[in-house]
Length: 139
Image (cartoon, rainbow, N blue to C red):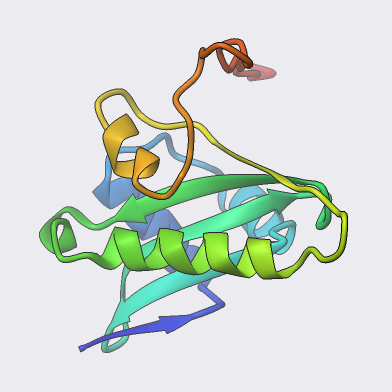
């Protein structure tokens, strides 16, 4: 049975990143990144971390959903859908009155339709240009 928590140990985070083939992070940098999260939801199969996503941002107007990962052995089991639904509902419930929030996410190629079902728009479109990024490495 899959359970969900709002916490993850740094070593479990690094192992999950490795399981999905993402870049390695130094342990200390990973710890700082996790500590800087506005919100996170982590899926566990007993004590094994099998999926997660987290939010970074200013905590009120701008939110970026990052680190959306599900261990390959657990994909296609609705874990990712549960996590994204929970995160979006949590973000939406954090604003009130005439407040607005922009929820952002950078999809890996080919997964855009997964995120569209949650109301996220593919960019570029008529009102927004393409997303952009830059990798930095001091080496």
